[in-house]
Length: 324
Ligand code: PMV
Image (tube, rainbow, N blue to C red; front, top):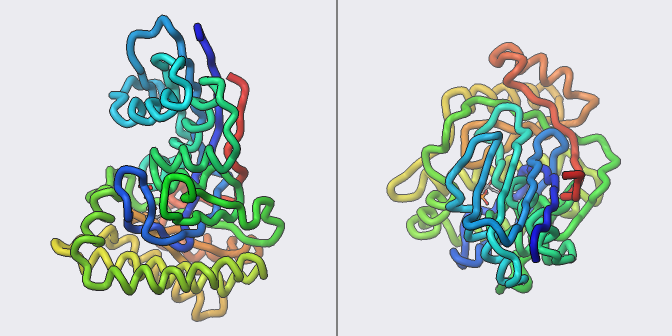
C-alpha cells in the first residue's frame, strides 16, 4: 500500500434508554442494551489517509493539531484487520454548533470507523462497522445507523453491535437540545460508569429495570407512541442520574439551569403538552416532542434560555462515505 484515502460523515445520537456501565472495559461491552435516536443536526466529517511514507499518526480536529492518544489505538484495530496499512493522517471536523456537552464521541468514532476501514481497503458490513466503532466509544456503536437504533449488549466482541429499529423515521418526533454548559465534563463518562458499577448499591436494580424499559421502548417506537417513549426515556434518564447520586463518592451532572429546563418541561406537560426530557453525562437537557408542538415548547423555554441555547434537531441518517 502506498497511499489510500477516504472520508466519512456520521451523526451523533442521543440515548433514550441509556448505556451506563461496562462489563468489559477493554472490549467496551455494556451491562445492558440501549436505544437511541440519531440526529440530523450534529455530525462529524473525518478524512483518513494511510500512507507508507508517514512516520507517525497525526490528528487534526477543527483545524487544530491534537495528540493522537485516542485515535492511534483505534487505528491499531484497523491495522490488525489490514497489517499492510501504515501510519495515518486523520482530519476531523465536528459540526456540533455549541461544541462540548453533546455526545461528539459517538459521531467521531463512527465516522473514524467508516473512513479508516475504507481507506485501509476493508469493506466492512454495517454490523462489523458498528462493532469496530464500539471499540472507540460505546455510544458510537449506534451512530452507524440512522433513526432509532438498538445496541444489543452481547457477551463478546462478536455479538455486541447495533441494529436499526426504525431507520427512516416517518412519524412526528424531534428533539430540542438545550445547551446549558460548553465546558468539559466534570466526571468523564468512563469514570462515571466505573464508579457507579463499583459502588452504587442500586446498580443491579438499574440493569434489571433498564432491560424491561428497553423492551417497552422498542415497542413504543414500533407503535409510533411518542407519549410512552417519552415517559420511558425520562424515567430511565432519571434512574441513571440517581445512580450517580448513590455512588461513593457521589457525583451529579445537573446544573441549576438543568433543573430550570426540567421544571419548564414538567409544567408544560401538566398543561397537556406531550414533551419529555433526557440528560446524559453533562448538564444539557434534550427534549423529546413532536414538531406539531415544538413552537409552543420553544416559546416556553425562551423565558429562561437565549435563542442560541435552544437547537432543534430531527431524526438523522446513518454513517456514510463522502467526497474527500
Ligand atoms: O460511550 P460514551 O463514553 O459516549 O458514553 C455514553 C453514555 C451516555 O451518553 C450517558 C448514555 C448513552 O447510552 O449514550
